[in-house]
Amino acid sequence: MNLMRILSGIQPSGKLHLGNYFGMMKPALELQQKGDAFLFIANYHALTTVTDPVLLRKMTHEVALDFLACGLDTARTCFFRQSDVPEVQELAWLLSCVTPMGLLERCHSYKDKTAKGVAPNHALFAYPVLMAADILLYRSTLVPVGKDQKQHLEVARDIAIKFNLQYGDVFIVPEPWIQQDVAVVPGIDGQKMSKSYQNTIELFATEKETRKRIMVIVTDSTPLEAPKNPDACNVFALYKLFATSEQCMAMRVQYEAGGMGYGTAKKALFELFWETFASFRKRRQELECDPAFVESVLRQGAGRARQEAVKTLKIARHAVGLE
Image (cartoon, rainbow, N blue to C red):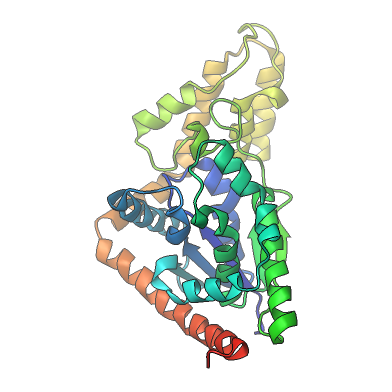
């Protein structure tokens, strides 16, 4: 391969929000220009938490709409549903056969989710093995991950190395790309924006719903006339994700001068958000009217992904003695 093979995936476990956009979507869209990009909708993984089949199908389709609306270039990116490439499940089994239990027992994601009340099951426990299969199947060389997924990529590397030591040089051992400059996006309550905290601002909610969410962002009780610290304000933290340096400076001056209430800052944030995503909303509305096109994009992407998957799986099957 002359280009880097870059792999990213996202679960269809809820409506996508600003945290998803700035944490995963925007970086993935920017990477289209830098290498051979593979991007998949991780609906197998979503089964660990989404048990309603109608909802899973709906959310999978909506994730596809969101990415296409936000500028995914299918000429540059292989975009597909995870479940349309069944080879990933066979590879996950082959990898399971060399994966030590202790490696999975140390994974913090399983512990965190069960601590939050998610019912423990084998799929949740073996999640890192399927993630390793996702990565290794397409011979990825670079995998962008947030800090919360760093351990799972390290597990994928460990599994690949162990498999290669046992059966020969079958897999490329991928390199992580930890996105140090990606901002932590605060939710409306000040915690990290997350579907599990129900504190999100959705990308494509209605104008009324979006305005309502932004207007209830938690702020402190500094009086209107008093100066305010923009660097300690959730509203400003979100505003600067969209704003130019000039807009940020002007807003900072207003905070520090006093005489501006948080309601004014929230209105400015809403207006900037609504303007920034205007073209994306228009494109999404067009795509909603053409579900056959969206399906064709995913099918074509799956066809290309399977071409790569079949080659890798054949090598792995031969290595272990199945062929």
